[in-house]
Length: 156
Length: 102
Image 1: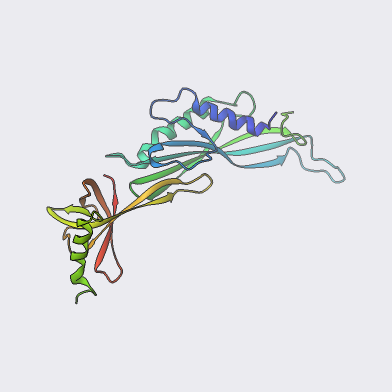
Image 2: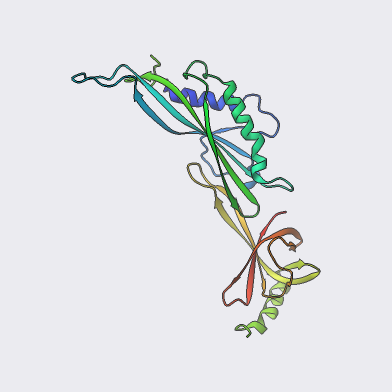
């Protein structure tokens, strides 16, 4: 058994790995190793942060704020690319970012685990120069769901 | 004003080239001997492990390649590169040109 969060992240990784168009790399769930330049482009999906809120305010004298909590997990989709002749590194990332947006939208509620589809919050582009130009584009998605306050593995 | 040991640099680079320690550097029809360094560089590391790439740098005597400048197409050791930037170092007798693949 695993938390609802873990099930959602796994479902997101699966969505990104299913039916990938040509040129989109197989996603890695939370990269453990440093890629080398010949392994680019690289696509990594990992959880960045999670916040938890009660469903209702605590009442004076009450021990609990309710049995269910509202959770919001930030999912990062990181794309690493390098420049090639006539193709800037951020341009090389573009079709992969488009795929991530599409795949996670299509995943919907991740089989009923989330309250709704993933909300895409934005993309951060970073650049480095060495033997060629490199880009790291990190998309952030917010996924809202709920779980029992005393059991993160149970929806209700 | 010259640099300390400036007169020896060309001879030293030629000696290195003769014993296989240097590389042929060609720019704009001018060919000189230089020293090529390739050093691993870890880039874009943050929450996930960094990308392992390399910095490639060729060292040549200052003024030996009059057209040496950012953006110039250059051949180093038989490979094509573009000059990323040119940085004098030490007393300025030599410069290092950072390279990128075209």
